[in-house]
Length: 268
Image 1: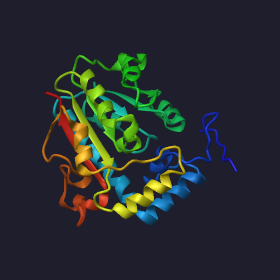
Image 2: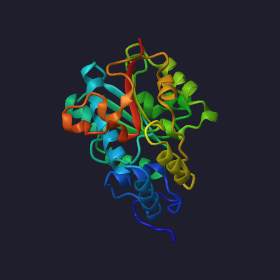
Image 3: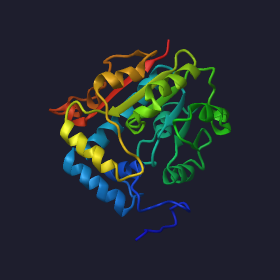
Image 4: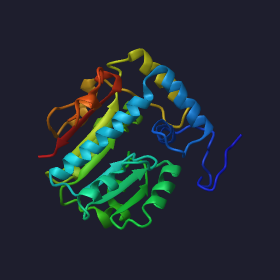
């Protein structure tokens, strides 16, 4: 049975789970459907999915704050998902009222809610597009109005690279974005890995086959290749809680349970 609500854009298949809505549920959001919640609970039985989501969101916050400290005032957030607490524009504008943010997602619920959230925010906008089309995204009027590609940019690919299959060559895709960015731009990226829990992650791959967003976890070396042409900042490519934690308790006793590698790198 299809769930209907005033906040659901017309034409959305609410019965087919989406990664954006699953992530929303795992973070405690309310913009998801029974199928999303069922898939999320299957993940929880296989992996510490709630902790993974929370730690990934915490990495996003720390990465944005680092980029602001590095002088970055404009951000392009690819695969931004459904708005929840701690959005990029909230973090950035609190630190610098002149900061500008463009969110990009192809999931209609994510875009609809971003549009609602940003209605009264002049320095932020959302574009419905597939992150695998960089030239289309970078030429889009909504992007051009807020983003100056001749100046350093913060490119965010947090928790999304695992949705790009090898056949679409994620390494070449990141390189296409990299080549369009001005020197001094930064890439903040995190992605699912097999390395810590291969059996659990294999189960997650199978679970996501029954969604609109299959996943393709990768090894440390494969994820490291996504940073080719950038210079990683310390501490390099590490599990999400190990990337510049603010408190010892943020790391916990087993950082590998995050099951995502994360890093931030600069284009020289």
